[in-house]
Each structure stands twice: as C-alpha cells, then as structure tokens.
Image 1: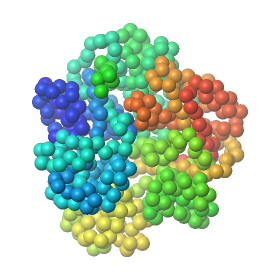
Image 2: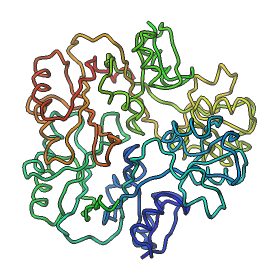
Image 3: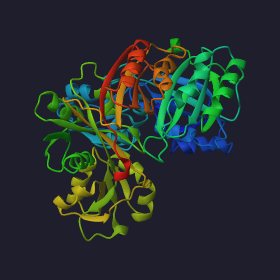
Length: 276
Length: 276
C-alpha cells in the first residue's frame, strides 16, 4: 500500500497515515493537492488528507479539492487522531531564557495561554509550517518550536513539554482518498457536496428534508464560500449510511434535483471513537 | 461616535470603520475581543469586526465572541468592503532583486501566483499580521510586504502594486457590535446562533423549517466546532427580515424549542452591494 500525504515527514498527517496502515509505504508531498494528484496518476494508492480539526474547524485546502466537479477519487475511509503540540528545541536550555517560540500562527494561537506560563519571556514568531519552525529551533539557541513530537528525535531535539495545547480536546479527522469504492459494513458514513442557487428561501431545507423524513442522521454540515460571490456556498454534508443502502439511494435521488449541483464524495466505515 | 477595532492603524478593519463613519474617533485594540470588551465597558460606542471573507470564509475570532452566552452587545450594522493586497516596500528597489516578501500566511496564500510572476526570486516569509510585515519591509532593503495600501504612506513606502490578489473578487463582510438596537427599515437581516443535541436525525431541518415554511430567505449558514467534541457545532444563520417583524418573531418562537440553545445576535439593515 502506497500512501501519499502532506509532508514533510513528522506532520500530523503522517501520524494519521501510520494509524491507517503501519506497514504502508509513505510518500510525502509538498501540498494536499500534490498528494491527491499522485493517486489520480496511480503513483499512490491512497491519499490521506486532514479535513476537520476539533478547535479550528474545516481544513480549507482539502475542501477545495473536494469541490472539484471532475474529481476522480472518492473517500474510502476516515481516521481520527488526537493532536498534541509539543514544545521542542536544542537540549539543555533554561525556559526562563527562551527569547522566541517559532510555529505556524495557528499552532501559536492554540497554545497562547500555556506559552505565557511556561516561557514567560518568549516572543511568538510566525513560521510557514510547524516543520519549518522545528528546523529553526534546531539551529538556534534561546529558541523553541511548537510542533509534532515525532519531528523532534530525528533532529536530536529535547522535548520540553509533550503537549502545551490550551485545550486538551484537540483531535483531527482525516479522510483517505482512493479510486476503489467500499462495500456497506452496517455502520457507514456518506459524504456529499452541493451548491444551490443564491439566496433562495428555504432551499437548504428542501435539500435536507429527504434525509430528515427518512430519519437519516446528519453528522456534519459545513458551508464554504464559492469564491465567486460573497454569500454563495458549497455545502458539505455527512450522513449516516452507505450509498448502496436503498434508503440512502432514495434520499439522494430526491435531494439532487433541489440542488444546483450535487456530488457523492464517497461512503466509508464510520470511525470508532472508542479507540481514542 | 467612538469606534473600536482590531488595530494597528492601517488594517482592513480600520478601512471598514472609516467606511461606516468617516468622522468617527478610531480606537485600535490588539485583539477583536479587546475591541468588543471596550464597547461592553462603554469605552467605545461600536466595535467593527470582520466576520466573513469571500475567499477564506468565516473569521473564527469573531464567531467565538458571538458564541458567548452572556454577550452584552448586539449586531447593529453590516459593512462590506473590497479587499486589496498591496505590494509595498522601500522606494527604488528592483523587483528582480527582492529576496523576501513578508506577510501573514493567509495573505501570502491569497497572492501566491502573482508573487511568482512579479517577484520571481523572492521567498515568502511569515509574519504575525500584515501590519507587522509592513514594519519589517520599512526597515529592510531587498524586502517587500503584502498588506493594506493605507499602511504604506505613513511609513513613506512605495506601492509596487496596488492589488496582487490572485482572485480579484475578494471582499470582507464586517459587523458593528453595540448596545443599541435598530428599528426595522424594510430591508433587514437578522443573525442567529444555536446549538443542537449531538447527531440527532433531522434536527437541523427541524430548526430551519419554521423559516422555510414562511418563505424567509436564509442568506447564510455556517457551522463552527464547539471545541468540546468533534462533530458538535455552533450554527450561525442569517435570515432576511427584522426581529420585530411578526413573521420573524413567530418563526424564531417555533424554532427555539428545537435547539439546545438559541441566541438572536441582532437585526440590522442589509448592506447594499450596489455601492461596491
């Protein structure tokens, strides 16, 4: 199994790929789109992409890929992993003397309160990725970085704290994108994306009603701007059930004509949250 | 009129405040929460806050404030302004020799393609804000920054390009938060926020149906993670009409018991997009 993912090695996406298949051949790419294109070109079997974080919400880069009307891959699995932000740097430093902490602005924001108490004299410095921040910290004394703990040991860095997130409920949901489709397991999810005509009264309700009438669980709804006009959206909806289940097939058949465009992104086994 | 906003001077939020009232006394704060708290403490009359960008979607910091169950301010206006990303720096530089372009990662991402063609040898460098990036560019040769054109002239910087955004449809919607309430104008919007019990079949449809049945336009729906558990959301909904209109009052009264918690964030005149 060849799995493509957003690199470099040491990212949370790599952790999700290993969780999915510990024996897979891991293929890092510079962008999420690059990882997905590798599957489209048959260079990889599956792309693992972050889709939703419990604190920050949707991962925009992945949703933009799923909006594509000629997407040649579909969702075949979901993976949920806990996200921990480790504080790492050159060994032997005193936390009081740390002058700067490097990380991606999102990670800095998620650790703001912990940073004030742990490294009171440090100034936050923005980096393009947590991996780039860890590289900076590995080259500079009086500097630490916030990132994935797995990136510390290959660079011989010390882990000053294994999780400094302000909110410990942090998890990220990933999807696997591939060319195969799955069979129903009895506990599946189906992901849909659709657009609607602008500003129509009740139109979103018209699309969702066929699912509600059949008591189909709606586990997620997410709206994303179309980037054409403020106020026009792509809607991403996850429902409980498999696209091959008759009740789901019927509901989608009834909902589709009420949208401008609807695409079934895939059906896949529901993640068992008990395993966390 | 005293208007608080996310500073420093020169941000897009300041442009929105000036658009709202060119004669207002402008009061910059370090965070969106700081600007809103100033209104809560009566140090300012209105806080102007970005809520939605046409390319990036919701502004999370503002939505988190609106999720607060004991919010003592309400939305009294909306303002929409075009967003332009200017490329600025010390005058007299050759674009081929620019080595670094500084900006917030979001602004760098929104200008990625233009940067490759305009400053082919430049490396992107992350900053904590566009204002901080412009400060760096004002002190360093061979460096440019991406930011608001209004921040260039007080620092005697040259504007190398007034808008290098890859997508020229970029706009941001702002809201004004204050203690007064508005009267119906005949063309108003009302913003609501609500939560629901986890993973209930059809529950979102139940909440939206009272509006659909009355042909009330739904101009926006946005879900944000509650940060408690992956898969639980705050829903932000904008409807067409004023909370004092009988039809709106009735619809909200019918919808409220179907939610776990519902708050009316305010009613305010709808922005006239023709003015852009």
